[in-house]
Each structure stands twice: as C-alpha cells, then as structure tokens.
Image (cartoon, rainbow over all chains, first blue to last red; front, side):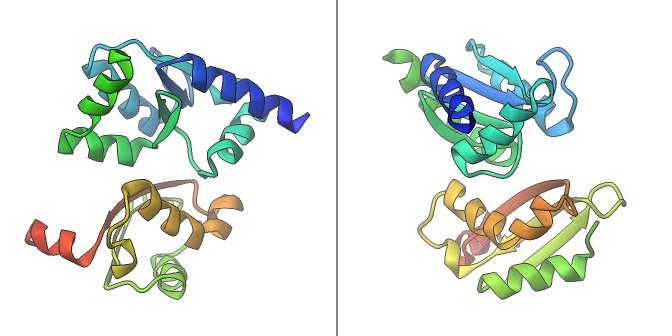
Amino acid sequence: MADEVLSKIEEKVKNNKVMLYMKGTPDFPQCGFSAHTVEILKSYGVPFATEDVLADPSVRDGIKRYSNWPTIPQVYIDGKFVGGCDIVHELHERGELEPILKSAFDK
Amino acid sequence: MITSEEIKETVGAALPVSLVETQDLTGGGDHWQLIIVSPAFEGKGLIEQHRLVNEALKQPLSDQRIHALSLKTYSPAQWEKLGS
C-alpha cells in the first residue's frame, strides 16, 4: 500500500517537467511557504503541475519519504528533487534556477 | 514548541557550528528561521546542507514541536564572503 503512493508520486514527478507538492492550490495556497514557491515558479512563466498534500494524507506522508525531506512544499524539475521554499528562493536569488528550468524545457 | 536554546543545543550537538542564529517567526515557538554557519557545509550543495540540519532536528520536526523551518546555511567561507 505504501509503495502504491510512492509509485504514484514517481509517475507525477517523471511526467511533469516541473512538479510542485504544496499545501493548497496555486490560486489558494494554504501556507506562506507554498505561496512563495508558487510566486517564484510563476515568475518564470513556465507551466508547472501541482498536487495539494492537504487533500490526501497518504501523499503528504509519502512525499516526505520519497525525497527523504521533512517539509512541504517540494519542487521537482525534470524528475529531480530541487528543494523546498528556502532552496528554491536561494537558487532564484542566485540566478541558478533559470538554467535548471531552461535545460528541462529544452529537452 | 521549542526554545531557541534547545534548537542551538540540538544543532550544535550534531554539527560543528560557528554560528546558529534563531528567529521565532510567529512568536509561537514553532515557526523558526535559522541561520547556520558550519564547516560541515564546505563543498556541499544546498540540499545536502539542509539535509544535515534537518537530520539534526529530526526529532522536534517529526513530533511537530517545530512546525515550520526556514533555513539559511553557509560554509565559513561563504559567510565571510557575505561580509557579515
């Protein structure tokens, strides 16, 4: 049963260039960190998929096990875990997020 | 909730740190922002640096004494460069 959640997550992470696990939705984020992460991703004008972990406790727990990362939001680009709000913010500030996105969408 | 002292103690017990600054973001003792400078971060990427801190605070994170954690991590050289 546990593995079912992980393979569901794996599928989404692999099938979306940018996948964001967050609390709430992009229009109605339920947490400041999730809201900030959405803002950053939106600023690049790239499409991204999201899943609301508050809607499914098994995903909320599963995503933490999938990445071995204790907090949400979590951003995945091109199938790889990039980080949570702090790291995405820091990469954005350093100008390092754009090349990561670019190489994902250039493929 | 957790105190600033407990956080500093817990992180300091797990990692060699030259600075741990804590800020209680809401005043409720469960939303924290930390600035941590450690030689253990040298040559590591942000995910690995944050993993070390998350690992150190695993217990209070999993029992929800810390509800939200915002991290800024630097190696001593990176910290020096910031000119702080």
